[in-house]
Image: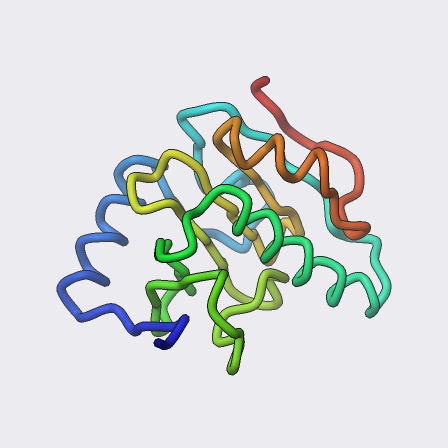
Amino acid sequence: MDNWIPLSDEQYRLIWDKFYKDFDFKPSIHSSDWPSFHIPVSFVTFDITEYIDEDIDDLEEKCITNLRAVTGSDEYIYALDWHHECYLYNPYLENTSGRIGFYPDGDYYFFLNKEFKWGYLGHPWEQSISIFGEELIHQFETNRPTMFGKIVRSNR
């Protein structure tokens, strides 16, 4: 089984339409417009401006571990890369090609539970990562990546 299953055109459209609506998503490179999304449930946003290259490997490992903690072994989540191919992703299966990374290096990278109850939102220009949903927030508090700096926003 593949852990990166491309979304169909219809799935892509429906999921992005839902994300734009539910999160009032307004992508922007201008800081006066940030945050670019409004998270309707508990969230924490971390600054990721100060890191070293080794921190990216740590981020990848801890994200996979934390996503495994909140998903079943046969469960897929959405892996979204703004204006690029998007996928159903299973963090339990061997990561053979790492199609979307967890460090937002030029685009918005989002990993979302299919019901949008929790998620991981990477903002490339603000250089921040937002974690939402108590279950996932707890996992990241317990197993925090070294890249996560100060909390820049939270509604907890």
